[in-house]
Image 1 (tube, protein in one colour):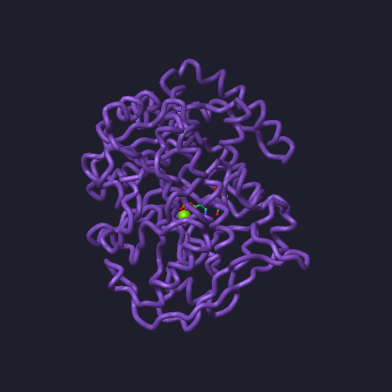
Image 2: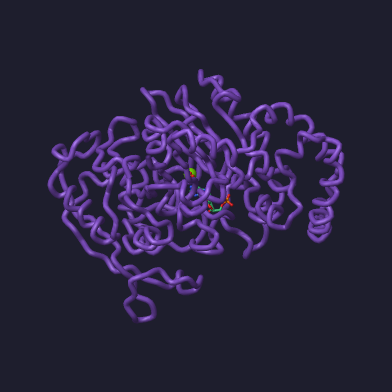
Length: 430
Ligand code: IMO
Ligand code: MG
């Protein structure tokens, strides 16, 4: 019985939430393994809209165990707030259905402020982040000065840990000419929220090992996308975690053999939020139209997303870096009614033709896409639930994408509604 990991195959916002929610029907456990509340996953279930940032998408379904793994950076206030908001929508969240890794790194106000400071600062430091403190928290984790969830269970050990962390942060603050952080204020911030998050704490590696041995099906829910991966993405315009599928193993404590089928989610076009290279970006009315039809505004920050044509070169690359077995292609209906549709199939770089996205920041900014043009379709794909419902030209577009990216389309999503989904291959049947 295979487990499944769902990862973004572009720059995030591919519609992972819907696919994870849809797959969670077959899963027993849903696990987040990286990122934090920078993710924005929208679920539409029977007309009700749920917006999740930190909680695994399985949480809205009764009887599923949701797990936040050690690879996640956890803002305890954001967790408490999201639990409260969903509870208000009638979702039950208790230790029965939510566990959080004891060794997850915490995001504190220190991190949020530093993130915002860099974003507002002089040119050169702006990445266009979500200002949630994600990057600074990961820095403290690898810098070995982070506070972790388990530390809240032993408040007497906290002051020393806070001092250690502040030695670093207050030196930075002084450098920026800002007031130093007070250790007492941070202690208070943590002590006050501890009772709200500690009930969910667990040794997640062991929990997942038990679940796996008991034959339970585990679904790993990626946040962001492979092109935002700190190693494989468009560095430095990336998020601060590994977002590729391999991270599901390290970010949960289950070995790589437990990860199973890799389902990459890709939109039928491309979007990006924040700064950074985007070869097939459209600056004309076509880009505007895609953005409007696709409602391309961020769930987390409300920012308008940049829009462009599907870039097969990029997705072919993320098929490699994430080991994607199959793709869930989303939002095909947004391309309904276009006379012609373009697909990026390669790049020109300094007069040469290349079939990959180069690693250097300079080269990434210089590449120019090479397009293939295909005829659009006049019929509608919105809400289609079988291949037979699709216009022939739309099928041709999907088939061409499969050829170019070197992976099959296993799932086609034709609206935000859970049931508007065409299944070619069930990822859980490996
Ligand atoms: P979901 O899970 C799209 C982007 C930010 C910024 C960069 C770094 O909804 O697909 P960060 O706050 O992570 O340090 O910001 O990463 N970014 C996302 N873009 N979808 C997301 O998540 C994102 N999470 C972060 O816009 O460019
Ligand atoms: Mg998002």
